[in-house]
Image 1 (cartoon, rainbow, N blue to C red):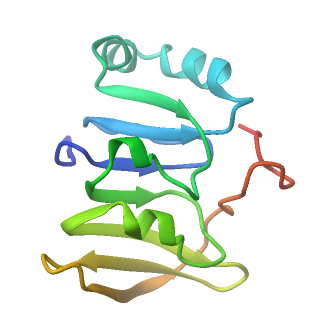
Image 2 (cartoon, rainbow, N blue to C red):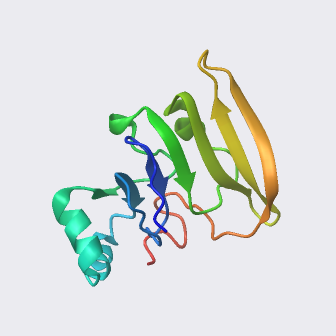
Amino acid sequence: MRHSLPRNSTKSAPAAHAVCQCRAYAPAPSSSPPRLLQNLRKSADNAKMLDEGTITLITGDGWKGVPAQAPYNAIHVGAAAAELPKDLVDQLAPGGRLVIPVGTWSQSLIQVDKAEDGTVTKKELMGVQYVPLVHPGQPGHGRV
């Protein structure tokens, strides 16, 4: 069963470790795109989505998202941020949702919803354990 996100949705991951059938932006460390593209192209389906522009690999900082393509109806982050990245919350469209693991040693999956009036609510969904979302220059950044 394939799941898709609405248009202008994004998935942020330190190494783009998952691919969805959607219009996706995957911010990646600047040192990783050649390897990521090579790995993505191993699958005919992924290669087709890359060629058609369904998947776009953008080199950048997952903490900052992709503001040039905002606002987003949905953002999923596949690595744990030490604290909730304000830039990602700011990029949510009214009615949008962000799902992100937050914490260092003890982590929780957090759901952030932005109401039509811009009000932001946060809900803790469950305890989780993810790899860290690192900033460029931090140890671990650029490893795929």
